[in-house]
Image 1 (spheres, rainbow, N blue to C red):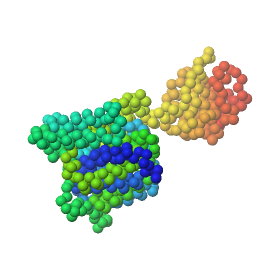
Image 2 (image 1 turned 90 degrees about the horizontal axis):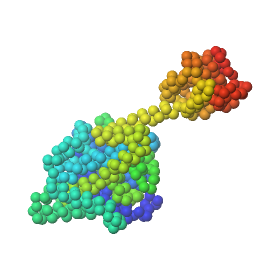
Image 3 (image 1 turned 30 degrees about the vertical axis):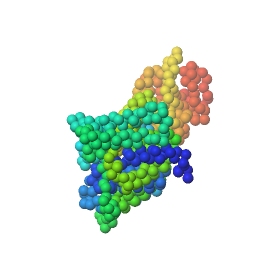
Image 4 (image 1 turned 60 degrees about the vertical axis):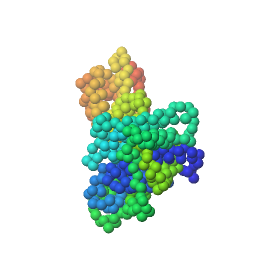
Length: 560
């Protein structure tokens, strides 16, 4: 009962309505871009909202037809020869996702750094804005309706469309989008409208868009928006025609190896996209809840099996719908489920009315969602947080996703983030302190808890730049692990490397199990593990040191 709390019922229903308005054209557009029947997108949207919404552990994530899979689905339908054969691949992919969940593959999401997640959200916000601008001005050259459209060859079409749209701006669409944006901004800025939480601004903006265009039509104005720039739902003329829109998988091709290859591809990509979106959804959650990702994989798998059984295309958790859900006040999974119910009711009862919605009005809703995801304040925050370790991977992730696609961009962002993590780890090999005395300079190197082979280069560089005639204390009292290569490096420097610069070495706190071999050194003090560290002052100022300290000159270094 916890998952279905009525505390946020009003805001959840309102948010579900907004998400429904956002999801409707995306379901149709993704189906069209995937080379599938338009109704297949509606089927997957309904299943994703109701079935996955009920089974998912996430309170905010909204699933639907997968934009990131459009190129895969398009190519798969063509190569497999029929849509029914593809449905079998989708069914098997869902079964594989359930297996992934039982194998606890969801743990992979815990290893995604926050700067990459933030970069993914900002990039998707930018892509939403870029891809909705053509709809906003009434230019829909590709008619795909998808926020993240990639053609069959894997190439972005966003920038090509943006370059073409300036010559085909529709004045009527421009008026509608400006009016819709004004309404949306008013609901976010005007105090008395902000208090009307039961009245969603997105719904008012869409209704206003319909009203404006209907006025244009009634007056015979040239500003009227044509059907090409309105929502386009199939309208069956009979029940038989309605039921004919559902399809069944072709189980006779279960032995086809190509089916299994497509299934594995869909299961892998869909699972990765879902885990990325779930991680992002948890970050956006105002109530700071965490999703059990293994359960999410199982829910997605069941959703994909059911969707494929009745003629739907693959489903994943989708960041655009999720972002719209959070921005509209959704707080529990009731918002997700209600959006699926609204989809089902609408396509059955009022498809003719929905077909009056201008895409420009829906574009206005998505432009606001995109701006919230890619707000300049986020870039400023990441810059102030850490210009190198946070901001650079963040920006590279943003650029990579916008210029390629979601998975490739996140992969590039992860690689850059790991690079900076490794650099940071290398620099944290030890704590470095210098003390100057009349007799010379004392340098204290306190090794970190774990000193791996990644730290070898940094320590080697430090040894190379030590000043002549100095006293060096290498303190391993706090270490838990020292890599063998690093131990060898320390031994070689103590035996030979310190001679040329007349450096006196003091090794402190090295454990017996480190087994540094006997070797020769210039001036070395060795301290047993039981005595504890000796301060630099004891060495430099000539104060009395414990009897178990052995000072040697050109003698063998005792095994520590």
